[in-house]
Length: 262
Image (cartoon, rainbow, N blue to C red; front, side, top):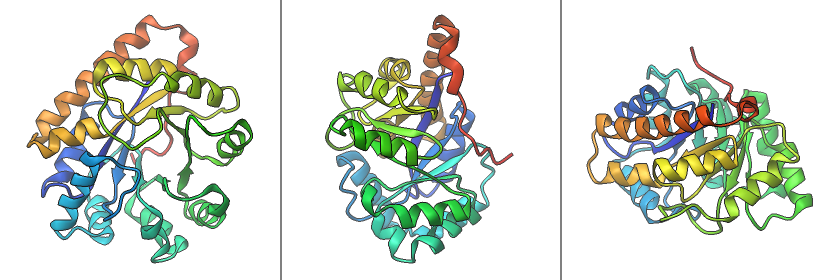
């Protein structure tokens, strides 16, 4: 089965937990939860707007974790945030708080690999899997090191640039996923610029799964209800499942994200 991992900015609406649960019920294998940050340098206009809206509502890391902890979430949750929020309390404290709230994973896109060792140790100690990103311009030796140190899955950034909806999947996505799969036993999830079922199927064929963020957040910013968002994700899930039925059996070898909360 091709993995489907939608992204949601925490606190973007008052009822954002309902949106989160709708993603789960629509067939998400895991969910990336964006912790709002004032300067999300890797995110494009849509997720920047979502983060700004959440911050304007007074959302903090502490409030997000408190709401998540009490939510009936079964699928693995992966925190997506920036280094400042990790280092402000200290990596050990931050990772421990994530684990206590029920998170399984962590992505810190602006954390340089050469400075990641402390966060890696803190995450491992807390039982959090630190997922690392690979870009199309990453050289082979660097790619091999990133893959060896990534946990949970490897995040393949489909194109250079920030997150955001695109009219088509970047041609670099397939080549990058193939380079990672050649040296990785972890699932390879393709993200950045993936919009809609057709592109999701294309990205899923390139890797083992797909991450969809901005396209969903645009719908939320435009007023989509949890049911609306669930319908969007269910359509992607159906397209992926249909494509899986037509694919060769060996494609399903990595179809799992660990950490279900029961």
